[in-house]
Image (cartoon, helix red, strand yellow):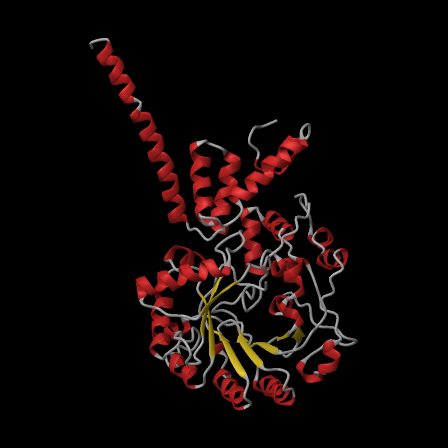
Length: 110
Length: 344
């Protein structure tokens, strides 16, 4: 058995095997948020989802939203920029914790 | 637009099992959808398989090496049909690069004399490349098209070089831009002057196209801002999993995944408006098909006998059984796909 087989994504709905009602509610919410144009276009949402997929390191989501972005009319240039946003945020989040480090350094008088 | 989700599992299948697994006729029957001819308002002539390009997605397998041309006798027979049947309002000339047929100009002139709306599937670059076999220049085309009020329908897979050149060959994007400018100079792409310039988008890979409205806005904005180019409409076409594109899918190992995607996106509304209900396709040798894709798969119209332009019978053709196979899911996926773009 291997983790993160692409084909396993097809079994996602089966996670509702023991609690279909909760899974149905999740899918309804998910489709409402991601699957429709709203204040954000479907393309903008797909690019956000692609960035989140990378930040959270989800291979299923990277598979789905690479195609999802193309099918929403995005191009590789925009998609690459979206994952740079995720990477820059990740770097920024790491670095901004340096404030905590400095606070501790100050506290211990170092 | 409504989408129905069908449960198709991906397993390895051969050509016969494939038609069973991806059974378009059964899908229609299961949903009680009847797809029969409504009219014949467009005669689409594939006049040559010769092309100055050899695109990755081409369902015709057109290239500079192909030699098939529609001869003058067959062209004249098509003109007789157009003259006899007022119901056939449009002639849609395709190829290859249709302008490379030696009788192309004659066909356009005669069809216009008959008062028909003439569309040419113009690949843009032939204006600059000329005939790859004889070297004959085709630089007169923009002026010729404008003079005879031909609707120009041109493939431009994307408004950026990357996707366009990847699919159509290196240098095609910049030549296409140059050629579009020449058409604009003749008045093409502006509003209300009758000179229609429509572009065709198809995905540069194994994915479904985005919505027509949304992509048209992007194309218009980008092409105008970056290159000062105007055009009328963008037609969105789904890649058909046959011939060269099929080979590409098989090379990449995602042929069945692509077919599953098409089947899962089956849209009954698109099936109702499928283009074979109002169009006939004629091959270079005069054989008749339900569409250009069926033509490339040799699925000739059979109505008691094999149909050709030489035994053309309008009433018989209106009662024909349209031939379906697995590739037909390409026309019914999502918002649908036809030579005129989205269906729904």
